Image (cartoon, rainbow over all chains, first blue to last red; front, side, top):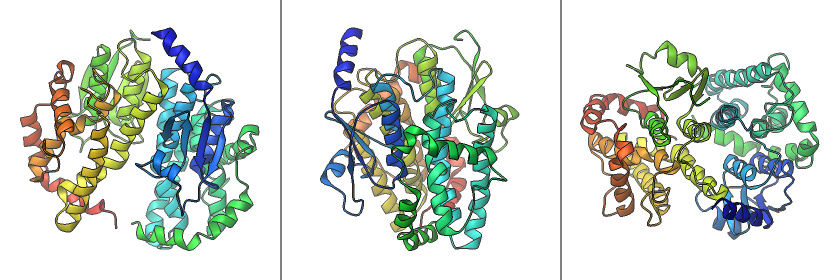
Length: 240
Length: 229
């Protein structure tokens, strides 16, 4: 049974890998980094999210979102689920630690980032309502402090240690996209004074050789998201 | 590492704590259960080991603390020998994880809102949760459990809809799931709750009913801050 499984695994590794993503999407970027770290060749299919393709809707009928990984005849959705899939379906190097406790820890922080940052960070940037901003800002800063403390405690170049790992990938929006939004909104959340370790980490992340290959340029992102400014403001206003 | 003492901080009414207990029992890991007496007055032990979320369950394995119920289940699967809780194939694992996340991220809020809101809003949330549960039910595909012949990760993740669902429906006076409209899900629920290992750590239904009935006003008050605009 074990040999059969391994043979199946090996056969699977040779199958075509495609990634349905979208330009400028932090979630798409996460998966691209994971694929590249694992040395997996893939074809990138870019969606126009205002006009979703049949391919996307077929392979992610539940959420209808990018990214979606197509591997042979199978599809996987949800960026963190995809990353664990890539980690397990393809050989070394590992993106997650091998020790079960360290893996649990990495997963905890990756999920923490997804649970906390989209809402609080987002609202802190885009909300024009001072009162709404104030309340989410406190929580956003607390969450940033927790990440800062993690980095400090680890004392390594990345959350994952000496090289980029799951948590770094999960936090990639903080490394690159937050600067873009801060520029557009003329607000700075991730200050050097309050979060020195995070700022240093962000710099290391965006300059990493593998990450650089699939990171949209800051200028392109600023242009793209400036066009969405009013929409984002409206979204923030409708979320209390 | 497996010989080190294992403790689980839980609370009797929590389906999340139940997830962790089931995982430990299925894996055959002996553990000491430490029950919080009052989640409105959390113990030092809980606050110390889960300072960020301050929630049960928390698994203590030697000097390590693991939080978040689904992460605990994966940890138990990986740190201890015993029958696997997640499938072997990476794609099946991804599938199980995807649906478990779907439950926690997409179902819990509409479920809660469908119970405690009223009028048109309630109808909308009820429709939403029913559509989501239909998607979940489809994952059974005629199998006894989501995991196949025996329990797996997704069964454990979905335990709330096997045991707690009908209790909440009764307290709220709301019907969301019927055997006519959800035949596979209801059959699965019975299989789950009558499983010999699950039974060992499933809170008594009558006790849950009394406990949640007493908290009804509090539950209704929670939705006021939750309902999206």
